Image (cartoon, rainbow, N blue to C red; front, side):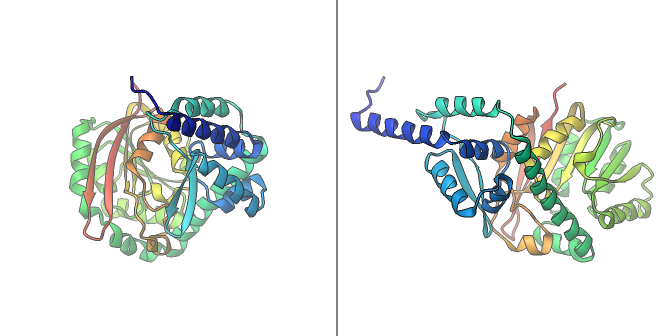
Length: 326
């Protein structure tokens, strides 16, 4: 076993002291609990905790310096999330146990209520965008990624799962995507869900024009869906970056899947092309594959097959399959 130098031991001792000091504050503990699975901006955290921005910035600086938080840029915005200590870090075990203990403490009801308000506001903004910009939305989205760019890969992924014809499919936010036609022609029934009436009408029109009698359209937020109709295949095609709480989607998806059901998720990898917010209503600028893996694992879903496609405009699409337990 290699012998650590006295300098390394001192550095580890100082890092441990910084870590303990960062944890030793009630507000900072609340912030860490809020960021267990989700990301928030400074102003959102100020609203949830009713803390002035100057004070919040001070606490975030302390938590970041201790390695407990990381800041991720989403275009012109900064969002905070929990940090991850490498497995070979001397503080990995300590931090893991501290987080595990912290997560056993329920979030105060007032913080939980204001957190939901933030999610509702994000969702409201997205829904209003789709209602307002539905006419040009398809054209705008095709500037990023047309379904034709990845349709062949989708067909291969679904085919490799060997799902029976009788499978029940649930698609979240089908909109005008031709994927609906592919799913309806391959499986017994498709339930298309959207929280924007204008977009759902476009889905209805596609079903009518194509004579898809096995498609049912429901106006609802995905989070409000009941679990009495479990899906063998749940599809989320270029929708996750519009959702207010992506990690929460995985948890909800796990309750909507039948035993050994599949979640097929298609979305952009992380990028910094902020113009997509204005013309496509994106809340998030793509996702790191590791984030999807973490959220799926936390929701009890297992990683399945996947593919990554680069596009000429600088975007990269990830197509992922996750499996529910049997």
